Image (cartoon, rainbow, N blue to C red; front, side, top):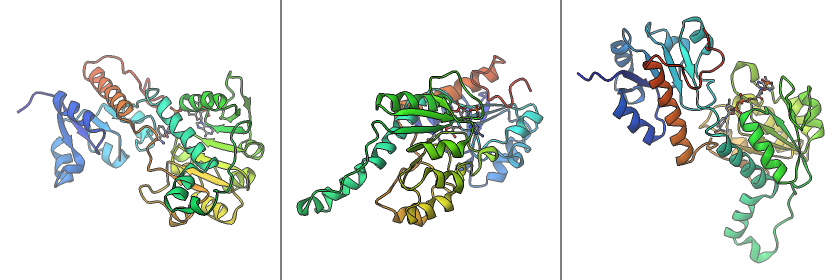
Length: 317
Ligand code: NDP
């Protein structure tokens, strides 16, 4: 029997990270188990660490009385019941900062693809339409106003890129920050005033459908919605309906409510919608860095040292 500590990984993460986990720990890959209940039952009396964070609801967490750490792969930890963790003395960590630039690049890429119709242009060439005439003109982003919903770590990285694109930046958070951008306490008012609504807030119950029909209607027929946050933060059926009817101009989307399923209505909107398969942070370098941070948190926990990046909800609990 190995004397390396047990770690339960709930879903596949970056392959290089899985290899390192296998080297450093006795790794139990829940999603590969022929009998998941048996794997859980076998580990239940002694398991101290869950990695990956996927599916970590109270039902799963309550099976492990000795559990001390859920180490998430990713900055967004809406798949972990952190309230349960806080009540039961379980710590949770995430992987912030190391992915800010990558996600911000994806967000700006989606904006350029949507406003300047780069994906439509690619199809235009491939389908031989250019031979028959020039493609219809598109929309500039220079000089336009971007309203960032969630000016946090990633939001600030997006803002600096938007400024480099000579855009005007404003933002909505729950609280005002010491930044040179105009603050809007009202999301609807901000949506009314901006050309682009850039959404990069956490998911979870508190932000569910924050980008409501009212917000989307305020953004309006020439407005562009970019969502790199979570699918749950947008009223998806209302968004599809408004995009179809032209009451919302365009959308660039990396995340969806029931991903990997994407509403057929969005699939059919090929002219004013650009879709990505949740790839905000998906480069080799960034996924490696996210994995390393997750593993460093696990090692710190097992060594009884301070955690590197504990989430606020479980800190000091
Ligand atoms: P931060 O915690 O640094 O920033 C979140 C921001 O959202 C804060 O400025 C916060 O300000 C604001 N916010 C939180 N709740 C609300 C609310 N109810 N209403 C208005 N504003 C709110 O997080 P990160 O920037 O590191 O990450 C943000 C999210 O991006 C992640 O949680 C994740 O879901 C998503 N993400 C998506 C990726 C992808 O692949 N598409 C990759 C990585 C992250 P305040 O507290 O003042 O309200």
